[in-house]
Length: 73
Image 1: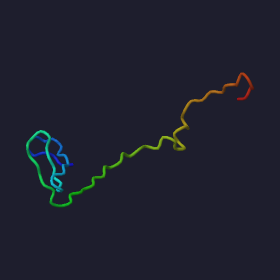
Image 2: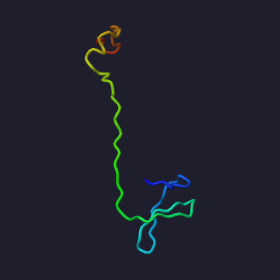
Image 3: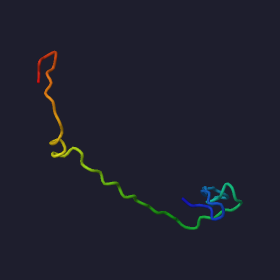
Image 4: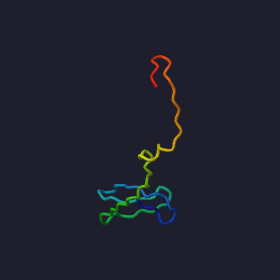
């Protein structure tokens, strides 16, 4: 993405006389595209805690309940 240096709006691609250029919808400016401009930015992923590990359920309280329909415990 490219931004207008005067108003900071996004510049849009426009084709004029078989040539591409970037134009601002607010300002009367345009910038002819002379070369390929590409870049990639990769964001770092968050570190997620493992909540289903073996030790996470050891200290939880539990109760014994019988099922009323089948008497399973």
